[in-house]
Structures are given as C-alpha cells and as structure tokens.
Image (cartoon, rainbow, N blue to C red; front, side):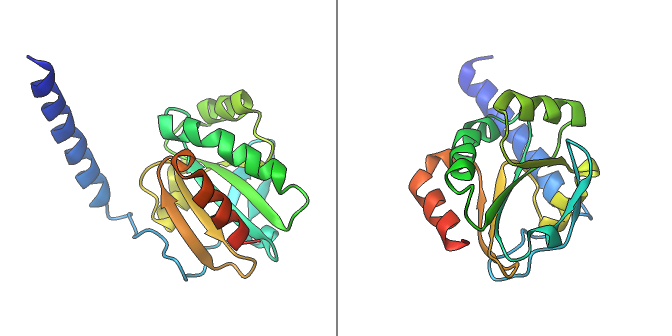
Length: 170
C-alpha cells in the first residue's frame, strides 16, 4: 500500500469516527455566542470542586483539553502566558480535562505546571453540555456569564486574536 492510499483510508476512517461522534444522542450543538454559559460543577485536580457561579463577576476562559492531543499541547504556552499576564485582572482561566483518564490529565497539568484552575470532567458530562466533541475547544465568557467567543482548535495559531478575545471578556 502506498502513502497516498494509506492517507485516504485513514481520512475515511477519521471521517466515520467524526460522523458517529456527531450523531450521538448525548451530543448537543456547540454553545453559541450570545448564549448564557451552562452551569457546571467540576472536580478539581487538587481537590474540591468549582462551579460556574464561583467565577461570577469575572471574565472566564474555559478550555477543554486532552493530554494526547497535539493541539492541546500547542495551546498551553499561550494560555499560560495569558493567565500570568492577567493574574491581577478580573479574569479567570479554567482547564477542563476531557477524553482522557484522570491520571493522564493530571500528569499533563503537572508537565505544563498549569498556573490556573484545572479539573477533570469525569464522563465528559460538562463537555457534552457545552457541545464540545473534540479538544481543544475554548470559550470566552464575560462577567455576566454570556459566551462572547468559541474557538475550536489550536489557539496558538491565532495569538493576536486570542489576546483580543481575552481582553473582550475582561
């Protein structure tokens, strides 16, 4: 089998997986700009839990990630830089582990020395409520709990836009 034939078969297989994932009864459409963020309770890696209400009055950047995902790994430095740059501002960053084991996601956060809240979404229930089917997916939520932006993919390919979107929810 040559490389082109292999790539075609791989693409066909990935397309089928994506279609079956999208057809799941539990799947919801991606939370849309202008909608109110869906309430949640997230088990934090360091213990305890965080709820959406805990971030009331602040901007919030929520990113759903997985340790195995190259785009999640590429996005981490930009998220880390933004969280440090806005440490004293009225904005919070939240990392939500999906499609991963808790152990692997915990290892991922330690590898990156994540300087902001990180939790594990057991059973991907929060991801399902937000309509997230693949990592990384990032939501920018304003102080009133309204979704201002939603971005799917490697955020590091749009660093200027990312910085602007963060400022929009401050």
